[in-house]
Amino acid sequence: MSDTIKKYSEMYEEKLEEKMISKGFGEVDSHDEEHVMKVVCKHFDLELTDTWQSGCDHYMYEESTADGYTVYVSTHDAQGDICVSENIFYYDNDLSAELKQAIYDNDHGDVKIYLSMLYDGEYWIEDTIRDIYIELVELYTDMCKDELTDEGFDEPKSIDMLNLIANNE
Image (cartoon, rainbow, N blue to C red; front, top):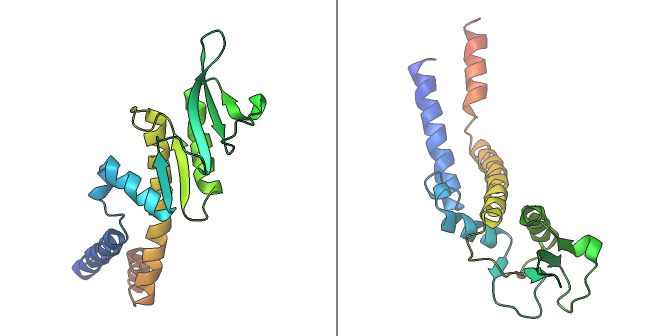
């Protein structure tokens, strides 16, 4: 690769990172779990809370069975209209998909999701938020690349291909 193409590629990557940072998706911040949570909540106009209140769009919490087993409830209904086969989960690892679905289903702004275990260090909450963040990074990367193209910057891959064609390599 020629020095000119290499410099262009580096400049393109810098401009892309600047745009990503301006949207809250910079490389450095992506390692900060608190930042990741804030960005995901901001994108979906979402509030995650561990304070029970009516009016939440979704509820996820632990309950105990009559014989002392822990089960997990995931529902849209605060009034307790629970369908055992649809809203009760025996394992907490099933809750990740439930949380993700609740976030995507409620993507209408000003959403509040109650998670009784929000600050209990539950891995599945962090994993779910991280997965959604990665999906958003892909979305915003594409948007930023489109913006750079609109500003007259071609993606380096296409420049590399043109260089190969021009040099008959």
